[in-house]
Amino acid sequence: MKVFRFAGVGSIGFVVDAATMFFLSSYIAFIPARAIAFWVAATSNWWLNRHITFDASNNPKPVQQWGRFLAVSCIGFIPNWGCYWLLMQSIDINQLLIESLIKYPEMKTLIINHLDIEVVWSVVAMVPGVLLGLITNYLLAERWVFRPAVA
Picture 1 (cartoon, rainbow, N blue to C red):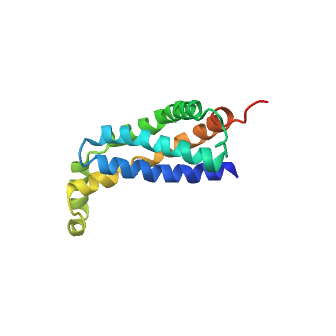
Picture 2 (cartoon, helix red, strand yellow):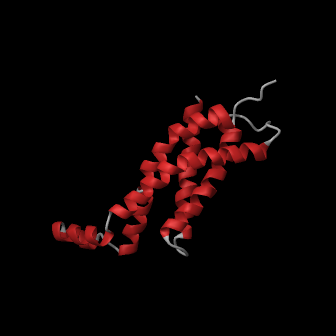
Picture 3 (cartoon, rainbow, N blue to C red):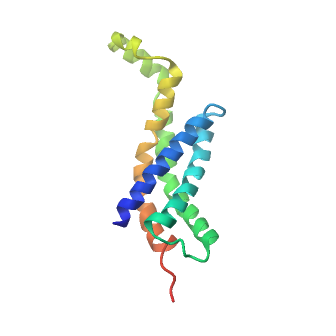
């Protein structure tokens, strides 16, 4: 079923997104790293969906198809980015660490350093937005981006 293949491709895209963000966050702040990672993942998702989900590799206008897919991704990007931004802004990592250590002093040995927790939280914060964008992106991709050409 196409929706499951689409979700599978999306899972691969999530890994591409998170890995790219993680790599870039070594050089730039999390928010710009996340923005760049989104575009890398959207492009890889287009290619995989084109060949795996919708079998649209015979479309004679791949650049137009890619542009449409990026437009659809931008629509899905709104809840994706919105959730991520809200979650990143809503949690004070330092306060969370202090409260956790007061409540659970045994966690002191589990907490390696502040950056590790921030990196983990930055990836966890991606999940709700990815899920929100899935249905919208699938419907638009199926009905607009990868629809069969009218003869």
